Image (cartoon, rainbow, N blue to C red; front, side, top):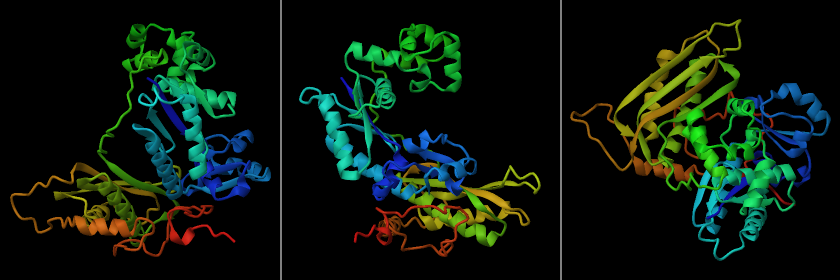
Amino acid sequence: MPLALVDCDSFYASCERIFRPDLKNKPIVVLSNNDGCVIARSKEAKALGVGMGVPWFKVKDHYLKNGGYVFSSNFALYGDMSARVMNILESVSPSVEVYSIDEAFLDLDTLDKNFNLYKFGCHVKGLIKQWTGVPVRVGIAPTKTLTKVAIYQVKKMNVATRVVQLITQQEIMKALSLTPVGEVWGVGRRLNQHLQQMGIVSALDLAQCDPAYIRQKFSIVLERTVRELRGERCLEIEHDVAAKKQIVVSRSFGQRVDHLSVLQPIVSNFVVRATEKLRDEKQKCSQVSVFVRTSPFNDKKPQHRGFNSFRFSNPTNDTRDILYGAKIALKPIFRPNYSYAKAGVLLSLFSNEGIKQYSLFQDPDEPKDNSPLMKYIDVMNAYKTQIYFASQNTSHYSPVRQNMISPKYTTSWHEIPLVD
């Protein structure tokens, strides 16, 4: 009863390479919002000593001097390329769990009888590379935790085919003996330290522990990990992803904002994005909250944090309603003479969009809740924003610094790459 884990290789950096063949084998790093920290690295960048999460200014000079390339985060591109990869996986496997933007688990139980699974893994890897340009690694094993071990072996051993299969007991035991316990899925830094102090230094050491003892000493979660390392499946493919309980859209600002007239349109942009996500989740919300704060790292200037909420009389996912609520929530918490470094909106108190709860008395501010209108706006704005709400920032001013962002090659008609 095997599973497979398909893991995109240095995903953000790989996306930047797809439309830039000149960057093959070149060091690439991708930066966080405001170009602050390194959030993704190609293997060539890792070889130059660039660490994950390090501030860009600390490594900038050395990195660029050695021929490295740098990009601001382009989540429109990354999200679209991820969707393309996942669509391919869903076409070749009857059961897929999208675990993250660059990882997915596949249930191979129904394929086991008719296919050589190793060849199937190689086929999937080649198909994704051919159709999207994204390089992937494939780990095949009886449990989710063991597929993670298989992926670690692909990286550690630099397997040419980028596919590792752990099916026989001999294959599993050898891989576990070569995997440090700190590399086991779910074993964090502090837990790793505790296990090391107990003499558990490899994944094999952990697998050979008594599950009941591990449960008593640590938790049922780690007990499941032990059982999974032994080949006992405790974690199944999840088909129904639980609906979100909150949606947050926020940004830190590269430039400080000290006027309400500047902050209000930015918050409105956050609301529009949040309500798009809300409708995509097929949910409505009964509350919108707005928060603002100054930089906690600037001791020389006065500090302020503000948070306020607006409650709707009925659940809604109409952008106009939520813009109205956010505007009311923002005004009391904004204070002049403060330089704000971050703001955001939070939607909460969700209910299914197919259920409508009527109030006993008519509210003069009854939510508009025009779902067909919102649907048409979402369709028209799917690839490029064409319809704006009046309170939005339509001048394309952004306090977020992204000086090195690549084009949205796959989601904007105006940024499609040109071929001579």
